[in-house]
Image 1 (tube, helix red, strand yellow):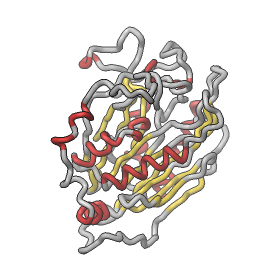
Image 2 (cartoon, helix red, strand yellow):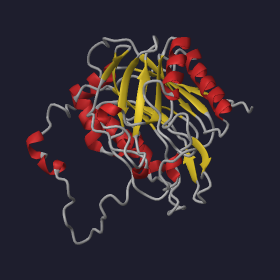
Image 3 (cartoon, helix red, strand yellow):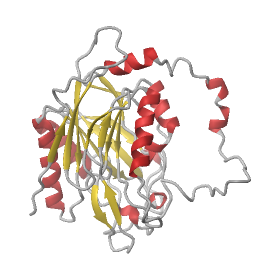
Length: 340
């Protein structure tokens, strides 16, 4: 069984000032950790690595440890074949292995643990569809083992190497915000990162920290196009525009699962603050545990100086709810074909 040596990257002890602070901070800082890891085809080894990553975050004093998208499984959406026996099958939220592991780790270490799973459609929602699809669901478990958040991915990518529409149903549970350790958290997932409407909706609902479990890397049909700088920039930009901390936890390694079109995930997990400053960032290709102290009142300071939320014009935003794209002579957009 192979071991993994994590690089611990921390901003603990750093004195990063809130530039817009005009009055004293009112709350304690919140310490969060994110575990960047490659999927291991040996389930036992993969569990050992996940446990070690969580333990490393806890050893640094983290109150919440965040894990990557589809925590226990490969990124099976690299294939367009869809779910099937022995390949990619959803698990129940209640009683499934992902929630069980998160609860076990949360109780063992006395911290909150965030994870991600391929969730089967429960009977209350009509039960599993004939094509076997389910939800891409992020969860957070409290130190007592109870479930405090379960948020289904809203936006589903449709593109080469990321055939998520073959596996996942779009979530419609809105933008739930949950209190954790004195902070307000939202738990969207990966492709949701690219949509400014989503981060704004969470911010309006009071979210101070958004956590994105992620699986993103190379483009099979554009092998020379490195999207990592764009991915990074759009998340940081939304942190600024919405006054939120961002925790983006990606995976590393190359996965193809016999498809012949491998994806190399580019890691680079990071935690950014409401000013767009990157507090900690992981390398592209190595396991890492990120640990950051979040100055929660930085959101207050920034949005008092630049009051984006209170100067919104919702009465002017009608076009944002239009279902179809406008026709333009210089665009050749095919709806539900490209994107991730």
